[in-house]
Length: 341
Image (tube, rainbow, N blue to C red; front, side, top):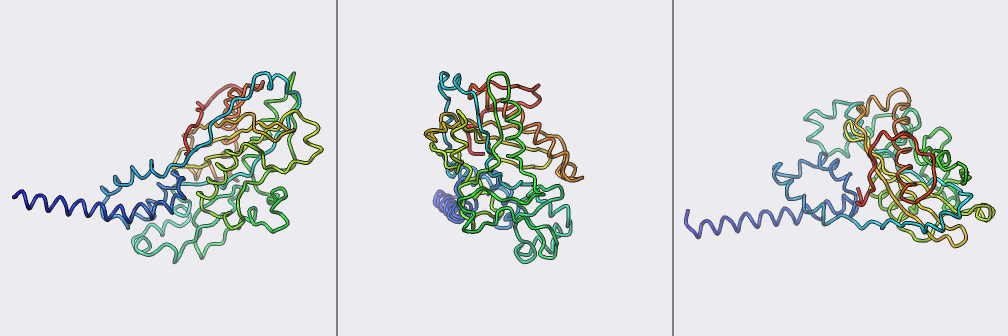
């Protein structure tokens, strides 16, 4: 091959790669909502027909680093301030819906894996929504247009609710509330008396964004976590009776094949100024069982697993904040999360 032919071929290859990136980067930027990396891998499976070959997936790796958003830095409260704490009010923050990858639609309707469906645009026979799984688990996933599943009205709001506490169905299970209860149990001891607020806190999200798009939830969670002044609408009477406020939220919350991952976010707040004086996050994972096993029988096994993982993460978080607590025996290795996963 002559030098001119070789040069021409390289130019053509560069042009091809450039054209691919020109299409791929804007597409995945919208898909990720500029930060949501976990959702990225799920969507690759649904849009793989857009990529000419598997090798082109390598072009997407640098995009992951370009699109990763900033994360609020942890804050360690002053030791003197922590030593003065005697009464703490614990509040649960609105939880995102559970993500399950691969989507449970493949288990409920294996027919959708057949070629004739793979070759068709999925919006013709599937829709993405938040639905309630048996046991009260709220899941963001694909639902057949011919399928009858309980719709989740937990995130449907009215104008009168925008500044009030979150109203969720009585039969739904909320992981952040379960962990807030665990936090009260761990903090209650000789020096600190903790109590649970009966007003769950809403995430800073517009009603139209409370849908099955995990990116919307991720952005709202990071916005809440990064706030230096608490936006929770506490009752004045509650603020007068405590020395600190503790807000417990859920970051990542998903089942990927047989791996369950959980991230817990905790903020410590001065009730007089609403200023955040402590902030930390911790995450862990467990390779216990398949989604089908965990979510069977009203998802009792899954709830127990999340509660156990969350208990260990709270222990990690309280240690980071210097709060005295009753630490249970550790089973999972928790790690301080410094990324936006």
